[in-house]
Length: 411
Image (cartoon, rainbow, N blue to C red):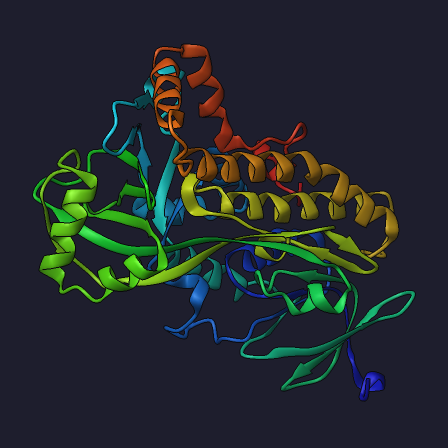
């Protein structure tokens, strides 16, 4: 790689400045590390794909991380609490209901648009003195030697980093360059995402309705509108995307029924193909994968960003402990091994749970729907099962990172 003699030296190079990569940069701020964040889209650009109008359901563990980072006070006014969840099986008798108050919590989670999270992160990134922002810029190549990795960055100087963090999405260049393989499963579904308004504003209830084509989520937003994630087979998704607004609302009403009220208006619609992407390993020499570079999930349970943020919080935790022992090499083998070990159970558990839901409710074998609906009704009658499900928003990890426990890394 040319230009290595003039490379900028950093402790950590984060490739990908979306929600997870930017959150990691903020989390590393108090540690005194030299950090570079490389992102292909300018932070203020309307085309930034991670900071768009898609909605994200933030679990309680994620809320706690943002509190620890000092961001929740900014996010909270535009975050709608999920106080109730209603699950139903379209055209069948199965349903289940959950109430946050019954479990002693204010909410199961909070729904917020990615654009709002992105704005708060951008504002914080601009205040970090030891952070080098490379936006817009792209990593063209990565070469790893024994003690560092060299990143060719266009435009600008190359970077020489002790640790490279791949936060560059499901098609991660860094993951490929590191030799880490990934297993990809196409669900044969497309998520249509939109904001709609109903005759009655959202009341804190999240609706999850399973249909033969895939699940539909209707989520409350802070302004009384509703965020809709409608999963369809590709051909049907194309047909629905082509409908005018009135016809779309009529089709959505028929699919969801009237529980969320009468739909009146719809905003811009976007379509996203759905795949399960799972890296076979999350670490390689001098390299760590986080977020969608490590695992890209179906949105059925709203766990993707929450899982990715726990990746970032755990990596920050491991690095803080490493520095606390007087070590400085952020890409040392013991750092990589510790990160992988701490993330394994949470990553495996959430991936199995999400993938299992998709396949459970997509199974059309004779008699399977009856058994599934009986299971839903039994769940609805079981306080123990509901209590267990209510804890999923904290993750499957045995050891939560300090940021998720309300402990700042700079203290």
